[in-house]
Image 1: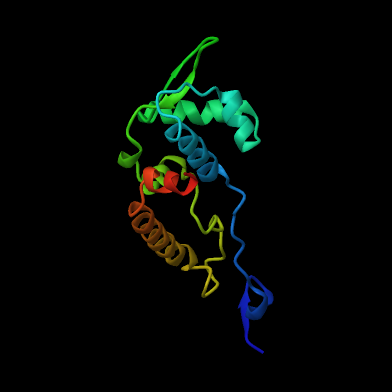
Image 2 (image 1 turned 30 degrees about the vertical axis):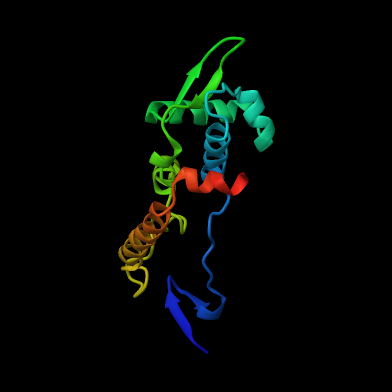
Length: 157
């Protein structure tokens, strides 16, 4: 049996698994918002209308629109005739740009904050995970850099 001895417990390495935090929907939400705006050039889309398409609370849409406005990609106006529209051509926004705007965690999840320094794995695990996380970010960035928002939007024509 292949076991690792750390922290006075035995762990069977066959039952160790990685738990991926896939609950983060910000990328999907923001690309949905941007896709709707890109498909409606020159039209003011309300946060309520956008939220109806995504089936989420309009407050979440307004929060993301605020971030996109700070980035310079979206312009918004208030009032009865208000709404938001894309403020840059969709071919000037890459999916990597969008990923960087919404990225708030490592794609592979979080590291353990206090591994056992006496364990042969625990003492070096976070350094090794840092390298792995950087590699994954580079791979994702390189892949997403190849496609623009315009390319993505074309799928819905």
